[in-house]
Image (cartoon, rainbow, N blue to C red):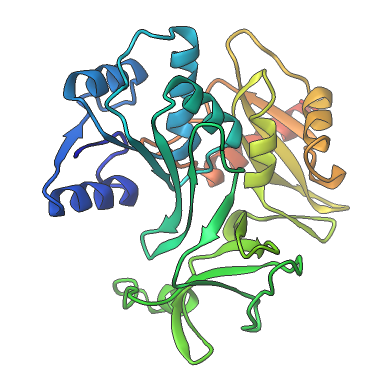
Length: 323
């Protein structure tokens, strides 16, 4: 198998996948440019006959689909058998689009982290693209409430995703973080990195988001990831992040930080209405900040602290909702 890691090898997704490929006697291909270049990606797949492609969610898959839609048939992707993603949300719509252009590939959406490998996964094939943020629970995975109870399937109760089995001993020289992440439930040690989820009635996982960036608006918890995924389905939005802004009445209100498509300038009203078609009304943004780029890191991650600071400065400077 020829495996290409489009994600940087400093990131767990790229590193673990490369090590797995080498350990099984395979070949690992990497990209030359220090910045992600989607044309280079497809040219390398064609030249190196890549079988297994490693990406980090929508940050990579979005530009890939855009390129395939813009120039269909330009690249030979017939060697691709599997595309694996972990670390960032990957939408159902994007999966369906990629499968239209590369029908023989299987898309494996892996849910996990460096300290909690194997939380869950989903597989999409032509004609059957899995829902965004829906995963089959891993063999050593469970969802627990704050007081240590397992979340019952179909209950609608939220809890934190935990992984048992072979897990790390802790964080190097950080006892506080070790104690917060590695917990004991049911007399067993678990890794609990902070991802919140519900358990569907069929036992599958509905991922909500990371608790550390959760927005508390009027006493309701809103996970930015679900707002972001709704925003990114709007045709004028290339990328989006949701952050909480301080508010004297609600504690926090939701602000959409949006990277628009070229030449587009979406309004707060149309984006809020679009989000309400997918989520409860209280999850719709009350402020909008347009940026030239979300500025994702090479591994596809978002600097929420930086973008929240920029949103606070921008909304404060413009003195109004909807700027």
